Length: 205
Image (cartoon, rainbow, N blue to C red):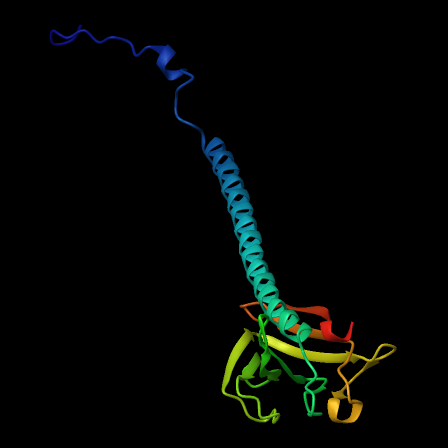
């Protein structure tokens, strides 16, 4: 006892308590483990996010191809020859033009339809003339059927061989089938894929 106060000894159990402060080495080990966990979590999140993004882009690409080929297949399949006319179908490797019914239920009304690639815009163009003058260089309207299109290749089947061009003025008939191949890039312009379809012309079957 000193000056009326009693000095008590500091309990040794506190000095050696299991809840005492971490050592520097223990802190470094804990921080290292935390960094590893955070890095792994970020890597997994980034990988999952990238896979989802690629899946979305791929889905958009396939959706556009379905729309493009849906229109092309329906219209080329209905291509028609026209009595008294010989210039009702003309095509080469990068474009095709033909005459088809204006609507399935109105076969007597015709229209001119064409597809060609605008390389400067990387777009697949569709043109239509609802008042056919059998001059495929003119059209009432032109529209983009597909974007990010890098390649268009068209071939024509004569019943035996595939050919690079077709002119009804020379052949005096329609091709039996038409094969359309397109190259299309994703919206980021990083990946290009090729797709193709073969369309049988119904009136020749």
